[in-house]
Length: 463
Ligand SMILES: [Zn+2]
Image (cartoon, rainbow, N blue to C red; front, side, top):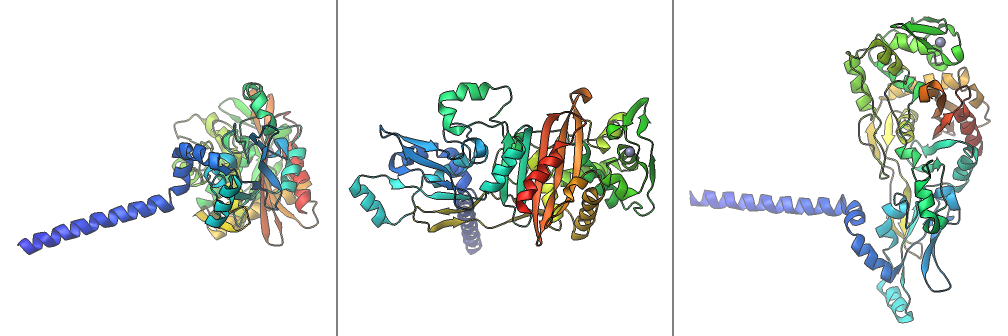
């Protein structure tokens, strides 16, 4: 009897001990970076007294942020490319959301030998902090910035197979070098230059949403070969008419033609056959109303449709109007999964951390986040997205020597139909590598599609 109870206590203690070990391992491995960055502000304040903040580099070794000392011996942060990386790299004093904030602790840590620390002590110098090598590509970022010069909105370019984010830009922007003196003006600007529209901008998707309506239609096992719809330019739903873009009459279309030419009437027809509960489930699986695997602050995209909703609202939802809202980063993740055979890689913004002498401290590896589509589903969607560029609304992007472009366009009506958000989502294939590109131009005239032109201007760099 006694032996048994001793045995039992032993097991309980061993169990508790194991739990404690597991908890600490979890804490050290999984939580270390985020905990360090959130709750150790005091520690980092202390570190900055002893350590010169490290440099943030582009992936090809250009300095994007560095610490300098002014004539009076005060350290300050300098951003050689001004506005260009204000949302991605961020700024030290303001705009807390860039790499400056996310890698604050690493930039202020100095992983050098104790000998070089002693030498710095003897010289009366601060230790040199670690450097962050980002995934950002200077040339692509510049090109995106120039191409978007006259538009508000955002651009994201990433590698589908690694998740590396090469470009993340948001317009309007601000110059972090001038932030200290002009912060009130910048933060009160009604165009919100501080807002990172790439991750925080919630937009009506318009026709890019047809990708999800199509996928649900395919997953419900509907007839794809025999599908036919005759578009007369508008359809009447409960006494209200819904037009195709520019009141275009598309005539008779098959399923791929409906997608390539983005026929609203056909997608209302397709949508009305769908199981609404199952459609909601698909959208949840597609990361609507859900967390995204990124470290930058972001907004969740939202979709909900109920069989009790009126027919007009339902009809609008099938082609991306109505109440659905998406962020550019979310749309980039969806395209990247299609390009990557269904597998979504976790977006990467940093390749590695190095000490001041260039030795690697931490190397980040591409990481699979989840599978959004089966390989077969991804291949089918790819074919539909290719038809958009080959024969449909994005035929202007079928012009490159070395790139094969896949995508979907959108012109989402906003402001009671007086303006539009112009979208292009998709990817460009070159030598079996897929470059995901997402462009949104916000509040433009509704009869132009600048996102396609912007995408074309940027893709030239990769051609
Ligand atoms: Zn039509």
